[in-house]
Length: 146
View (tube, rainbow, N blue to C red):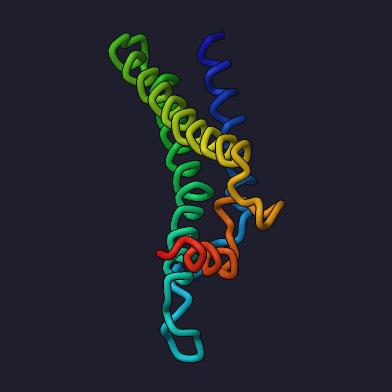
């Protein structure tokens, strides 16, 4: 019975992770400046590039790796054939993947909550800290004297 529940959880995680991974459009490029027909690279483009890389990790790579680790741990748990060492290793893999997800997305949520509570972006209400337009970045740099 335990193996059936684990197998069901494994299949459910794959059916949940796949649509989420497919919903977001793929990142086709990180650098959108300096090429033919593109604007010159400046600080705004550097910040946008770092935002695109961060979004790639948060929306694509981390969920994909976590789903693969959970699937691998579930697979090892199902085929352990009574070997308690393999079952413990499988539990450790699944636990590490889930704890990693909680740490990463919990940290993201705490930063988002903190910055929204201190009214970080009062000049542009409704614009999140991780999706600032270039005009906001340029204004912040000019007013702070950076």
